[in-house]
Length: 94
Image 1: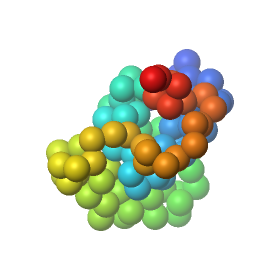
Image 2: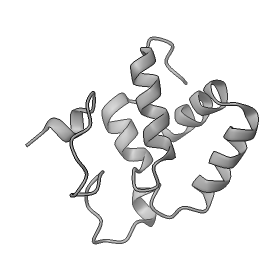
Image 3: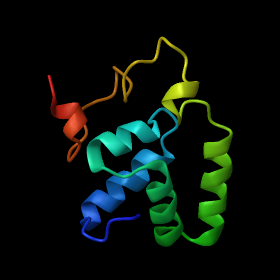
Image 4: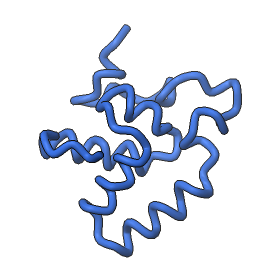
């Protein structure tokens, strides 16, 4: 389930990653240890209900949110043109 020990900065980053179309749930699990179901619980708790509904519709219609549905050519968590994001472990790796 949703882990209560996350900081406000981590929660903000998870929400941002969840809204990004190109960021799969597997990237969130890799970085924060939250499975897709945990992200859904977090989003439902942190967003207004209308925003949560919009997000759920968007996720269900987005083929890039699940690694299994992605095109084979997409093999990274972020766009290679994206600048480094602060507080993001993935972008700091070489």
